[in-house]
Image (tube, rainbow, N blue to C red; front, top):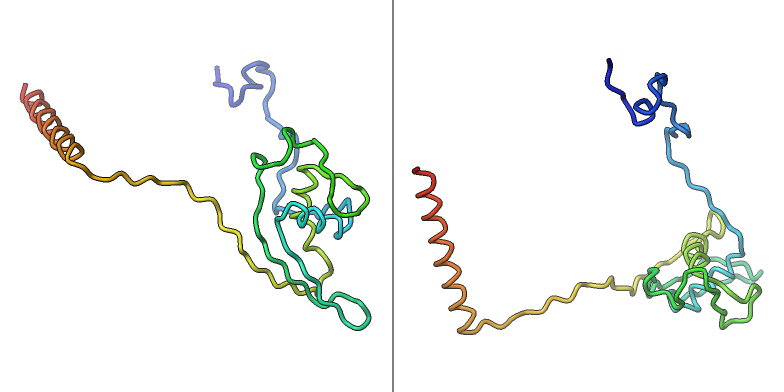
Length: 166
């Protein structure tokens, strides 16, 4: 009897092929899902103190270019509420007046999407968190413990050589 190729064939031996539930795409594609306006997304990122943004306008009040400073990027563990779905009120006057973690995440994907020929000047003042490393000062007790460890290691290696001889 032939060994089953998958768990499904092990359960039902009559299966001859495994059919994927979805066709595997040849290329990845990305879709912009914009459910709110760009101004709403900018308001969320400004309200959370994640960015500072400034738009330069021409005489017809069209935006020529924009300057944005990325100050910080929040992760779910730094979120302001206990649950990611909990609504938080915007401090700015805007409708809708509330947002949650998923709106914040969507804001990072959609606030920069303005029009094809728009110029952005992006500045980073955000420094990723570094793990804190504590340096230990060397003392006489550390050097004596190192000597003890070296001695034990030497004894273990000698014992290993004796074991190999037998």
